[in-house]
Length: 270
Ligand SMILES: [Zn+2]
Ligand SMILES: [Zn+2]
Image: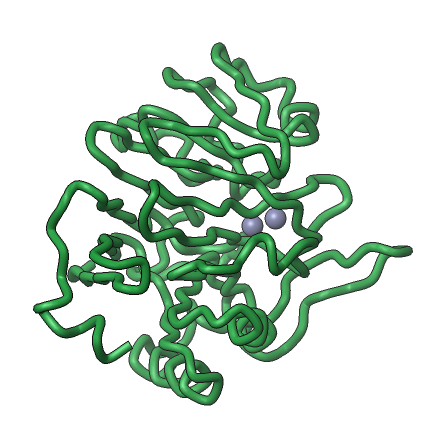
């Protein structure tokens, strides 16, 4: 990753996506300045402003984000209930998610099929099934625009096709519900709940992903001292050969490409 910090590697061309973590809190009571709102990500490229997930915390506020499209990972309230009064832009979700939120007055509802890539404003999305909930089946999204790609999966017990989902990905954005304690349970043949950060770092190692950021933070992270938990996650990452960190509300990253292997990540203050 050292080369990535070398300014001579930075690329300021067109192929650039900007990611802003609008919210980074999971479905928990705990709240902090860094983790105030339910996890949501804004993906910007040109005029496209694509908001991924829109939980209860966004019900009255997401209009200010002014998304040109909204993409949902699943129907749990902390990801979808912000749409209870509708939306003034197209909303993308799987058939199972639409069934679960059929009561919401969404005028422009688009159906996402797993493993069938689709484009929004020049950004390509591909949904991958993940194990997380039986009532609200979830997906993660592999997102790219011809250059750098990243995988966004805020709630996950297991990725059903991890290699197809993660190969060649520059950045993994995962589930921060728990650091080392597993919150995965078995229901018949399925896994539900949340894989700990340490397990997700293992998935990144398998696919050679160099950078991981965790959102959808659980109370263990939200209640911790920000510096202490950052150091703990960085050390866990280092033990896996991965640059790992915790996202916070307002964090903005720019993924841009010079070569396929060169990614620029710019941090901004919250
Ligand atoms: Zn959640
Ligand atoms: Zn969930």
